[in-house]
Amino acid sequence: MDRINLTKYGFIRRPALDFSDDGSRFRCYELDGIEVSYLKSNYGIYISGHSTPISGGMLKYDEYSKLPHYKALDNLNGVDDVEESELYQLANDIRAYAKEYREAEAKLEYPSEEEARSYIEEHLESYRSQLYELDAKLRLKALWNLSEYKIKDLVHYSKSINSKINYLEDALKNLENYIRTNRVEIKQRKKPDTWYYEECLEILAGEK
Image (cartoon, rainbow, N blue to C red; front, side, top):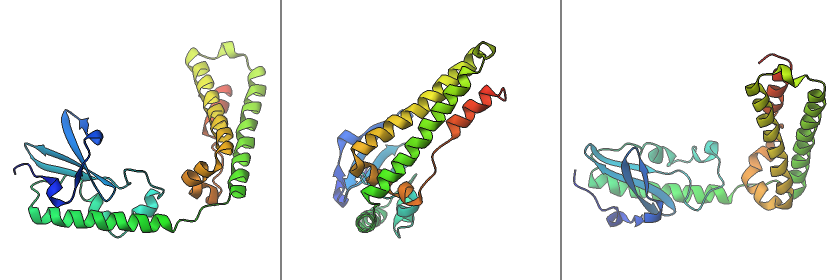
């Protein structure tokens, strides 16, 4: 099939979003805030629609994937031999999906600053406790009995816990942004992550 002009169907060219993948150069377009990637290859026309608006979106996967027109967008990856009638339908589907996304986003309920602050402080207490306990155990451990790569793992895992602390301390200074990006976790009172801590304990116990 010959190269097609997506602007004919209402798509706006966005050169700044163009990218390369496996040696192929994809041209990017936008329609109602939704990005669409386009490639004309020897095998046909490849078009891919992005599920999150270019400007960013607040819906999680399990939320936007339930929107009525999400399936049409999800099925868009790897479309060959596109016909003109399909492109008109594609444009309509993207417009409908963008509208559904905006409407769903407008209905989102966000936790209060008090809820967010309580959630952050709970996690901070947990991560600080993890570091404190690890420090106490390290003081009792003969580290020369550990291999170099295990010591490197201990350092890496400890730094990862500390990074979580730094992130949450910064979050307390910018609650509004943290609430927007972590509303689901806050509402569900997601438990603090203990993976790095448990990995350190296994190393110190000689189980890894």
